[in-house]
Length: 320
Image: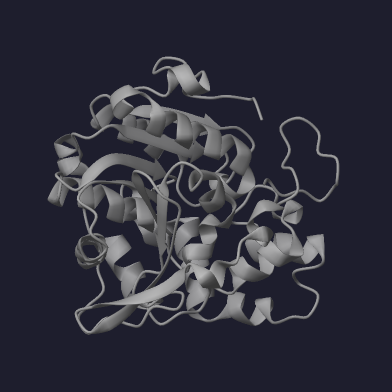
């Protein structure tokens, strides 16, 4: 399920992304009304539920390389946040707290009383807010290169530069260049701030990822990222927590991962070497194994038995 520019990846490199192409996604995609507005999502599998939340300028397809694997043993829901993907803009203002409330309402509408929440970037910020605001709902928390700490300096960071580019629809225009998805050099130009080696992504995956750029919800979501604070409330997170980070993240520094681990009691940290802001796409086989190990560990307290990562030894791993 990992993606690669070569058909025979070397150890530590992605493998071809095959699994997601075999799924009839339209059969699992639907929308539900939340406060009179459509929220788009995919829902497949059976078992204990897992909810995926994408980041800024993303969509549910940001989890394409993970959903099918996790759905073998779980019910998996991946949503388009309001104003992104195929979801409508909300009537009220967009903010991290309002997104957390909306996702909570989605869970209630789907009949979910307890769910493992996995969020990337802004989605991690939202997931953390959910675990604080509705602790009875969030059974497990997984933060993947989560925003929320260094966003206090957002205007001075690469994330803001990327945000300005997306705001001006630069990524959207680039995605319409006929050869951008097929040519490794253009893939790097388009997604170089997001992934460590975007040239390894397949053309189909690149095309899908670029399709999430330039949506209506972007400006307000960006503003909330730069203005909302969570640092002083992290000690209120009480559910089993896994933190996954790319060692070479150019948008949210890996130092944030260590601060999160220190701030959330009992949390586990796994850092992927040679990975950027989206390790679930850059090394999905490894990510899926770590996530499944965390979810299946007794009480979710330690993924070490299933993944080989204990608390003290979980800071880095070089295994594929």
